Length: 141
Picture 1 (spheres, rainbow, N blue to C red):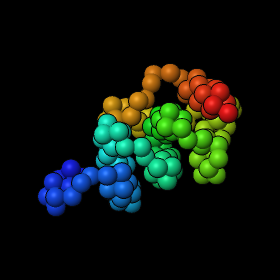
Picture 2: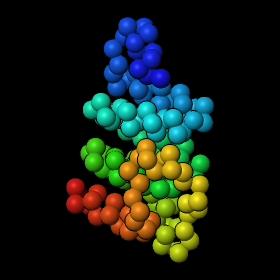
Picture 3: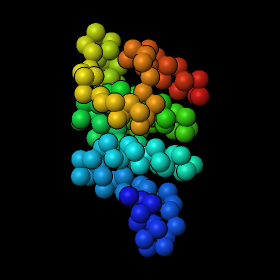
Picture 4: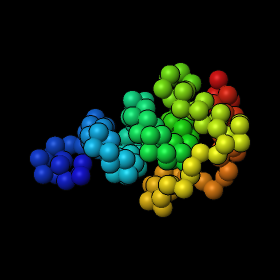
C-alpha cells in the first residue's frame, strides 16, 4: 500500500509515510495489515517511533493478541526503547506479568499464523518470554 502510493505519486517513502499508514490501518481495525507494514518498514531500515509501538500494543491487547504484544516489546527493546518509561506500555506489560504470575494464562488461541510469520513470535512459554524481556530491559539500565 505504501509502495503503491509512493510510486503512483512519485513521492519518496520515508518513516513518516509508514507511520501514517500504520496509524490509519489501526484506526480501521486492520492490525494484521499494520503489522505487515511495520515489518516492511523495518526491512527498509526505518525505525518505528515509540508512538507507533504504543498504538500497535494498545490495538493488539484489545484484540487479545498477546504473543504479538510480547514480540513487539522484544522489538522495542532491540530498537532501544524502554517501555517502562511509557505509562501505557508499562501498564500493558504489568497486566501480562500479573496474568502469568497468578497462573492465569492470557487467551493465546486467537494468535494466527499470519501474525506469527509477521512478527518474531517464538515458541517459548509466555512466562519465559516475559522473563527474557525483563532481563534484557534491566541489563540495558
